Length: 252
Image (cartoon, rainbow, N blue to C red; front, top):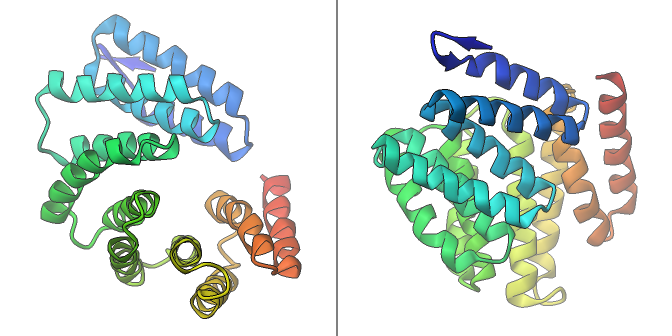
């Protein structure tokens, strides 16, 4: 996977996707760590940055806080070393790092990175789903900081972008469930009931509308959303989503 003094990132990511599609997280992490060591050894800074980004995301998902934070700091250092602070690749790193900080209850630390990513993305990716993802994650951090009105504005911006992109119904569903959670935190379950119900039912509609997308992403979203539906009392739909993602995982 090393060609002309550089790692073949395409082949590394292809193998990573294969492992993740089977939920084989331990092998995925070992795979990334091996190639990060190789990249560092040959001075392939660009791919070292890519691998640190992938590792921080995986460790975040696995709730491995110290490792996730370490890979985030490494990635920020590589952005500076490569001199790419203002390009889209750097913005993606800022977003990934900010998401790690938010995940481990450091929302205040995440906001400056979200803002930096937002500035770059809005200049370069005004109609891209990555901007929608940024808005969604930024809103999550704002909810943690109890800045609910600002969060709701970003959720609406995220949905506006994703509505225009084919196949982004699962991501819209996640955003609507996030809006339900934000309404609960802002108003409480009783006072926020109408908003919460509207958001949850819209998420159901979106997930039902794209059942033909029987891929790993759809399975992941169903798995992620199922417990939220159960929390709000939609137990039958929680079980239906469980059947959907298990069927997809078994077939992969």
